[in-house]
Length: 333
Image (cartoon, rainbow, N blue to C red; front, side, top):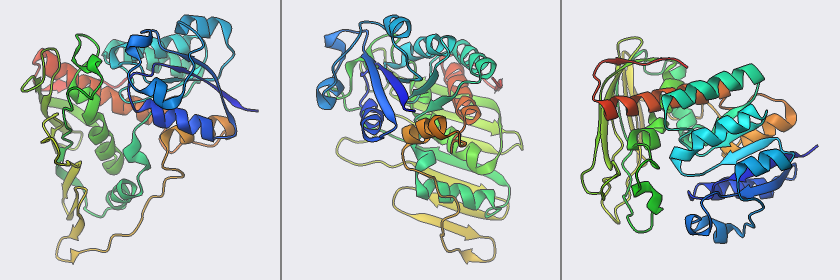
């Protein structure tokens, strides 16, 4: 039996990977496509994918179409509402990151998913990279001891003019921390097994971007074992100069560094260690992992609960930045 997928929102280029995977997988049928913003909101993804829109609203799709999964890549501020509607209708949901932009939305999403035994997925691609999976495996197997401190940077280019213009419109983007650092929060949590206890500080502001978009963001968080997380995920990368995610983890027995160029693991008193694969994702495609799990019943590489936990940290760190709160406890959803 095929998995029937409905797409809502084609406003971010990341939808292209999901849509192409849905076309490629022989057990997936695309049964509906909708973008509520009208032709002027489509950006480049509609023509690039050759998509024909089938409906004018998600409400029409839910009322008229039989489907199993909603795939969402609308602008960030719209996603939470779409996800909640789909879950209320008994559908599984997979989105580009972030899942939503407001904590109350996330609480509702978590409640519905658990009550209705529905799957929720976020397209967190680092989880599906063999290199990052190896980093996580080394840490999980005690390769650096217990985490003491870490530093994570994920700078991006602003790309004003080529980036979708809704990024710069009020209420649509929802904040740079929630947009970008969800990757870093998730990877370190996965690697260490530690939960985040509080946001010591978070700040997000406008430095070079047009009004209404935060293009600069920094934060510090505390883990349950009193270790610290320091991060920067600004849209400050120099035009034409490639930036990479950088992870530096210091533990009680060693250090691990991954920055896109070098991958270094050192043990106390033992020096450099050989990098060998420790975790091997079943696929490099989060969308494929999601729909295959529904199709076959096998567990996902990244579960619904892990997705909800990653979004919980990101949306609350963003909240701390937006409200100026310090030492804000992180609430589990």
